[in-house]
Amino acid sequence: MAVRLDESDEYMHELGPESNFNESMYINAFDPAQGVGGWFRMGNRANEGTAEMTVCLYLPPEVDGGNRQVGFMFKRPAIENNDALDAAGLAWTMVKPFDELRIDYVGKVVVLDEPEQMANPKEAFTNNPYAEAEVHLTFTGQGRSSMFGGEPDEPHEKPGEEFAKGHYEQLVKASGTMRVGWPARPLVGPPFLAGALVLPMADGERRRELRIHGEPGRQARRRRIAWRVRVGERHHAPV
View 1 (tube, one colour):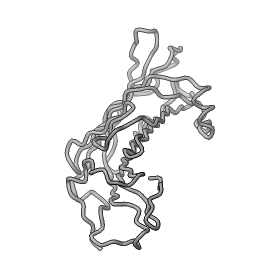
View 2: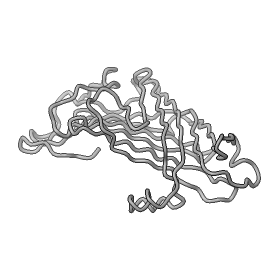
View 3: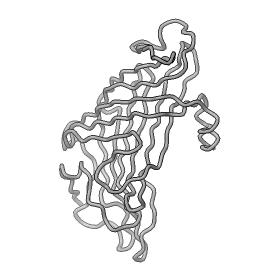
View 4: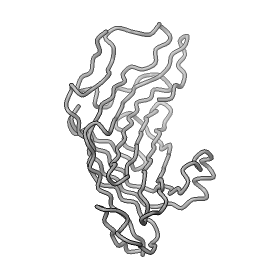
């Protein structure tokens, strides 16, 4: 069975009539040398009038030997169409199909000393501090040959059991910066970690700028256009 994957599939698709039509993109990046990274997801449910935006940042200790933290944000912003993956401060830009994708996030994250607290999201978002975050990452691939998946040229599911119109993945390389701010605290030893910058802010806070230098194959992305069909009625299927 062959699959079809064209450059046009890297861009947004025409919104279908399905009530739970969902076009989504997920991507992750990690710099093992600095111990910093994150993952990002945006899913458009335009016929439901909302999107799903998730940002999760893995932060190094503020000081040597300190605890690691996680910066997290999830929102369901209102959208009116499927024209772009751009809502609640997170924007995805396809620079060149199969070769270069950029994501930018400007907004708040809740800072967790114990990520397990997200098992109770309401409590976690209520009882933990927030910080301003800014992420600018560029992901590069190696062309069409580095893509996995696509739309089958022949149906491979039984009528009434279709799930995804298109699903593909790619191993990519990431580079860019991530900034997270918090109230100023005493510094011990080198500023946070090698390669990080401590930048003064007007309100007496500090923020760290982490330059991510990824290696090919350490990061991945995937895209899905999905729904589930049962006996003529379309039901939600998470992707």
